[in-house]
Image (cartoon, rainbow, N blue to C red; front, side, top):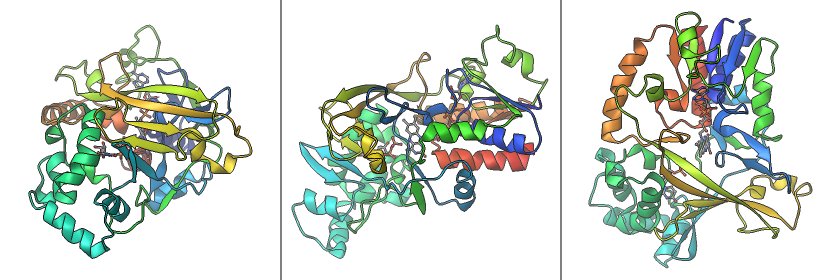
Length: 378
Ligand code: FAD
Ligand code: UDP
């Protein structure tokens, strides 16, 4: 074995694939019973509808190198992601665009008129120098739109006062003064034609890649554990960075999700793939309806049944899957200490969403793994 990789998500698989292609023998371990990390999907058994096990995953990127790389393993459909939100029982388009603004104010503003209106409403804060999510959001769209569509959804999703969240979280969403309601701005977008798992498995399909599932790096009863490998073989570690150091600098806060899946006896439940629920009195943040991710599979999916999944968000305890780094000021302080420790850990390379405590999309995880491979490991 030339390299041990802990975690078979996109970060670990990209390193493994590159290393195997360069003639190296790689072992990947993952504590889950399947490979692929959070992008893993499987077909719901009654309906055959592909369900993303850890929440809906939409692939999008403007990075040409990443786009060319991923196309070696899968083709993509022409799916374009659009999200709607339910506020006080009325459905509005997202991200906030001219359609949302006109529907909210019951008006027919032109782009310039809407800009002027929002500019007047947003005067409280300068979004460029915003110190937290609330200031950035109000500076971008003004208080009324913030309170309707952002404040309570964000509080539900992060269980943290938006004043204690970093402004970057909201910068993920564009604000548009046109009726364009594409959720993402990226050049390329789509879903893997044969599903995520086929794509993930193809990345690991190489005689020099050995995948061992249901294997936890911190379980000393299995041979490839932290004690037996560090210093013996280079390790790429994509689990949680605070767990690696036994939480010595304090716990980093993570958010986890609970998913409530249901098969319903209707052909179409909500008419779209993702419906957000903006208000505090609805306990879940959104409902996914998976058939709508693949309209091209209409002849394979039943027309009298559908699969929906309600998503609930809460703080993760140690026993939960850590999904989203919360990134409060205290977390950022602790992260600096963990980064120092990580730099001192010879022969161990920390990567991916959990290993770097960063909100990485798939294309970012793949892009950073490609960089780690060529700059540090190759
Ligand atoms: P992961 O996929 O989390 O993989 C890490 C792996 O390490 C896991 O399989 C875990 O089991 C394993 N592991 C951890 N600890 C140990 C241990 N001690 N021993 C052995 N194995 C261990 N990205 C997008 O581009 N678009 C989206 O729409 C999107 N939606 C998302 C929705 C949700 C709910 C979540 C959580 C993420 C979403 N992402 C999305 C991000 C995407 O999941 C990540 O970018 C991608 O999975 C990152 O891959 P990774 O390898 O860094 O981490
Ligand atoms: N957001 C919001 N209202 C919405 C959708 C998003 O306030 O209806 C905010 C929220 O703070 C969220 C952030 O925008 O965390 C980024 O949204 P995105 O949909 O990218 O989150 P993800 O899909 O990664 O959970």
